[in-house]
Length: 423
Image (cartoon, rainbow, N blue to C red):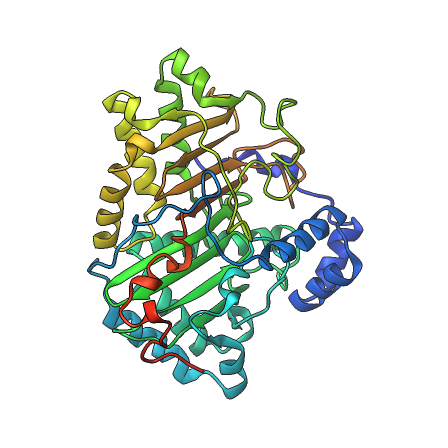
């Protein structure tokens, strides 16, 4: 069957204390117990490390610790900013005084950086969609719909629905459901001044910065466990298939000597990996939550050195990772990325047979994307499997959260507040 998936072989024992406890708690109780009790210890330790990383001033992901200047500029990207601002103001108009206090942040607030992708509500800012009125929830989703491409919005909604499906599988819908996501605004929605928002929760985190008709959607994280809904009203829903299939096609099509250079580790948890190259939560990917300043050296093969057919597959991967963006923005971003193929590196971890789980990364001065098959977190597969996927995108050299653009905005270079900024 086309809709069959092996994930049901790995359904967990829901009689285990982890699941009986989770089932009895709401999201806030669940997060409080985690933060105070330190269970599970490996992710509690990771969270503590994240807090130390958050204390560092923002610099941006780099390849060598040095931020390259002059990579980004202010330009007209054709963003439908009037529609997006109207949708955002629709949300603001429905917020209570208490909700406004929790949801509206200064444009430069460090809380931009406190998103995370586990199910634990580690940063409870903004409004949470499963705790608000249906009117306010629909208004918030209108902001997403106005900001993203139609296919990007569908991808986000499908990720949310898959999260709800997982919550049903482990009988913990109060912690994981279709609407267990937070929304926070930064700055005042405006067609002329910069602002943005963060939308985040388990397996879906989007950070979007706007200035006039320009936008930066970075960093973002999208995952799924499992990546297919095989029962219920959304049966057949699946995400991240193009990123997976085209990545494998690219690797399989390379000449053996190029494959050998691209394959930086043969095993998903390779004995040759240095300490810290793999961890329980991020597993192989490097640029996830709180990794805003990570140094990620280039590895693998240079895209410009690959055959034209392989370069076309790279572009297909880039297109898939940029699918959240409106068409006009996406076209400009693809062209920008292609200009850097001479400094874009492709690397691979794991096997590259049809059934093999794998990791890959594309990295350049203006883009980093990562794809990783994971072992189970809620499902009990001990080894990475193709039904649990993590993907993410970063804009290196200070590009995340629109940081590299902010000093280029008139008035900001002298430290003046922008029009419309909140005290």
